[in-house]
Image (cartoon, rainbow, N blue to C red; front, top):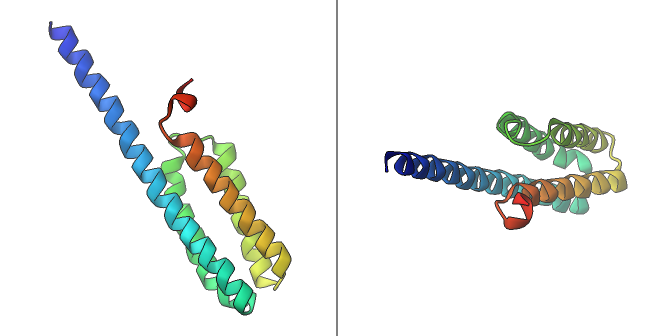
Length: 126
């Protein structure tokens, strides 16, 4: 009987960690999405230099959360997103509008994929 209780406690701890991870991923990615969408809107209505501060802040937020993502996400995926942010900042600095929009969309897509793969679903478990 004691073993059943220990197994139940361990199982509930694992499920709790999965739920916390899902909430964390959702919150961080939604925040990054909002900032990237705002940067795109500003870029479409004015010069890219006006978006530079917002993109740099978004990159800083990404760097802060990247260390936690590294615990449960492939480092290759994180590095790919990181490199795209660096390229995005470069495009904003050099006023390359179409390249900026393409790279911004690429980052949003990669974040969506990251979010989809980290949610606790039967598809992701199997």
